[in-house]
Image 1: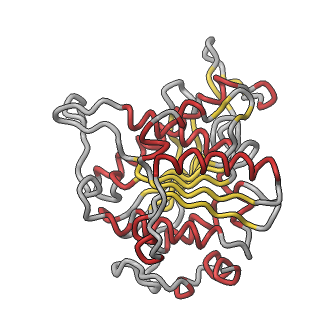
Image 2 (image 1 turned 180 degrees about the horizontal axis):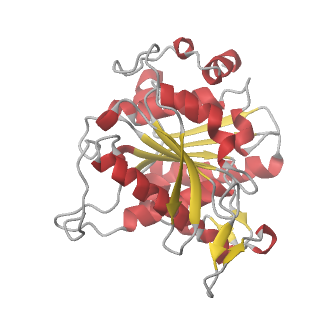
Image 3 (image 1 turned 180 degrees about the vertical axis):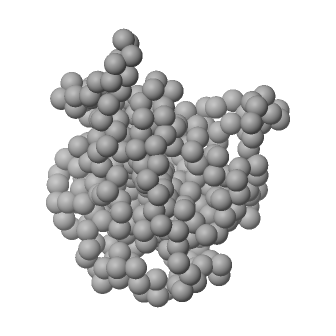
Length: 313
């Protein structure tokens, strides 16, 4: 699998044995990545890179959230590869990171985030960054350019915690008689998830029934870092109680196992697990195929237009 991961990030789509959606052909040129800006409810301008898909309504969207002191560029290789496979990927710089460095103060002036001072509630506001990104994807859905009903969130380190918190909010959105507002996240990929960081912890989202047991989840971690491995393993063990053990038969397990745990023999963590020579990239691709691609025709995954009838164009 080490050689496979190298081939995957090198863009060699023939390296992976599983089928690829027939609409995607290697000879087809995918759209160039697009740098976009979205604005949060509290007035923060979030910079992001969007990798559009050619599959339109069959395209599975993925939001990728970097870790602390990271940036969206860390996802470039994986995002580009998945785009070639037909996925629609967006990678934001979370507030205080990358190019999302400023916010409007109460006086209306532009001020710069100070990461050293960001703790607790300030970090939790990153869920607003994700919500703004989802709004961008919703517009793409309604334009027929992707299928928001099969949304996946990928998060590294505290980005995974933020992704889990936002997934809980997405599933808590009230469903109106004529308008479905949320319940779009169907899968999560967590790279070296942390239980607690600067006053932000996973207790809240882990207490949400859908997040802990209703979403297909892949957890990856480097086992040679004792703290990171312990956090990831405890989270997997806690979720396993609600997902149940997979069937003993290997083929049946591949079809039905919706909670997976990958441990790498490395001290690398977070987006470092995407390094060439590790199996994590291949495991992510396989997970997305089994848990999302194969479900696109299932009830709850079909494309629908999602315009709020109470809002004007």
